[in-house]
Image (cartoon, rainbow, N blue to C red; front, side, top):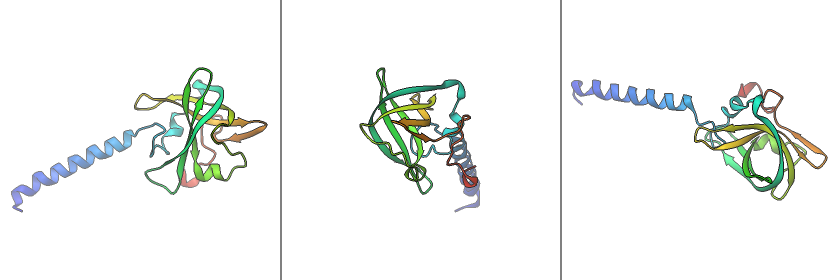
Length: 150
C-alpha cells in the first residue's frame, strides 16, 4: 500500500472505532441480552410499584459477555402483560425460591422504559406464597453485585 493511502485508511479506522466506542458507552438499557451492567443504573425508586399476576413465560437470556445468563419473566396481570427482569441465572439458581411458568407471584420493582421504548419491570423482590426472593436493595443495587461487578 502506498504511503499516501495509509493515512486515510488509518483515519477511517480510528473514526470507526470512535463511533463504535461511543455506541457501546451509550448502551442499550433494556432487558435485552448484554444489558447486564446497565440495568441497575436504570432503577428508579420513584417508579417502584407492586404488581401481581401469573408467570406466562420464564426464559434465560444469554449475556453478550460473562459466564451467566439473565432471567426474564413475562407476567400477566389484570391490566397488562409486562416483562420482568430478575437478574443473572447464577444468582437465582443459588436461591431457595424458584419461579417458573404458571406461578402466581407478586413483584415489587421499578417500572422503566428501555432505549427502544419498551417498558419493563426491574424486580427488587418477588413473593411466591409465603416465600420472598430478594433481588435488589431499596436503591436498586443488585444483591448479586460483588467486587467484580462494581
